[in-house]
Length: 450
Image 1 (cartoon, one colour):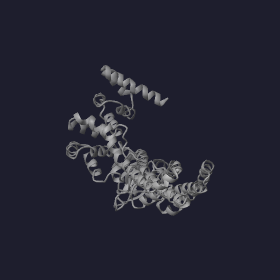
Image 2 (cartoon, helix red, strand yellow; image 1 turned 90 degrees about the vertical axis):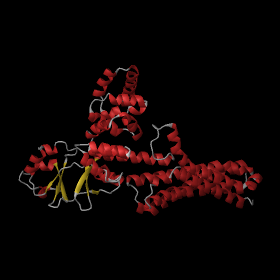
Image 3 (cartoon, rainbow, N blue to C red; image 1 turned 180 degrees about the horizontal axis):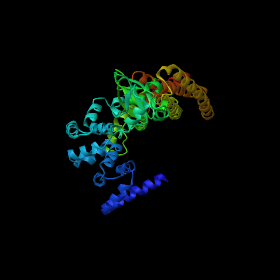
Image 4 (tube, rainbow, N blue to C red; image 1 turned 135 degrees about the horizontal axis):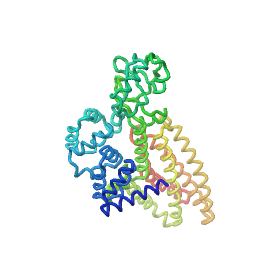
C-alpha cells in the first residue's frame, strides 16, 4: 500500500511538472513530508529536480530534502543557487547535516558558504575538523550537560529555559564534574521521580558508556544498537563531553554500511550507482571486474597447460563448470556469512580460527556429499574409475578450499584494517576458479596416467 501511494505521488508530480501546474505542486509539497519528497528527486531529470526544489518554500523542508539525497543530485540542484541561498538552507539544518553538506561542496565554495553562516557557523566549523566516518564527524554538538551538584528542581527549571528549547535529544541529562568531564547520566523519568532537592550526583547512573571523537562510525553504531540507546555521548581524550551521536544517525550508518558491503560483495564498487550515468556506472565497475578478467586469463593458461590431457580424454572438460561453480558458490556463502558477521558484531576478529575451522568443516562435508553425487554420475556416464575418483576428489577439494578461502580472507582483511567486504565477489570467485581448475587437472592427470 505504501509503495502504491509513493508511485501515485511520483506520477502526480511528474504530470504536474510537465503541465507547469506550479500552484497545485506547491499545495502538494506543503502537505508531503520532506523525507517522502526527497525520494521523488531521483526519478526526475535535472531540470525538473531544480524546478521541484525551487517550489519548496520552507527552508527547513529544503534542508531535509537535501540531507536525504545523493551527492550527485544535491550538487546538480544547487548549481544555480547563490551562496546566500545555499547558506540560508544550511542555517535550517542540524549542525551534523550542515557539516556533511558542506563537505560535499568544492573547497572554495564550501569556505564561502561557511563564512556566511551566522547561527550554526561555529558549530559546523568545529565538526569539519573531524575526519569523515568518525564519531566526531557525525555527532551533533547540542546536548544537555549539567554540574553534578545541581538539584533536580534546578535542572527542571534550567530545561524550561530558552537555552535548551531546540535541543534535538532532550531525553538524557548528562552530568559533568568541575573539570567538565563526563561522570554520569540520568533520564527525564528519573528527574521527575526524585525530590526536587536531590543533587544529580545522588541519582545519576555513574557508569556512562561513551565513545571518543576518533572512533569509527560503524563501531559507534554497534554500541548504540547493542545497548538500545537513543543517543551515545562523544568525549574527547580528556573525557570532556563534546557531542552526541543520535539513533537517527545510527540508522543511516547501518543503511550506508550495509549498502556499501553488499555492493562490494557484488563486485560493483562501493557507490550506489542506480542514479549515476551510464558512463559513471561503467567506470565504477571496470576495476572490480578486472580481477575476474585476470582470473579467467590465468584459468585459460592452466587449462592450456593440460591441453594434451584434454585431447586424449576430452570428457575431462565436461566437469569443469560444475567443479568451478560449486566451489564458487560455497566461497560466496562463506565470505558473505563472515562479512555480515563482522559488520554486525556477531563475529569478532579474535574468533579467526574458530570461524575458519567451522567453515572448513562445512566445506568438507558439503564437498564429500556433492563429490560422491557427481562422481556417481561420472561413473554412470563414462565408466572410467580414474575419472570418477578425479571428479569426486576435485569437487571435494574445490568446495573445501572455497570454504577456507571464503572465510579466511575476510577475517585476515579485517585484522589488518581493510574492509572485509572486498574479499568477496570477484576476488573470492577468481581465486577459487583458479585453484579448482588446477587441482582438478592435476588429479585427473595423475589418476588417468596422462
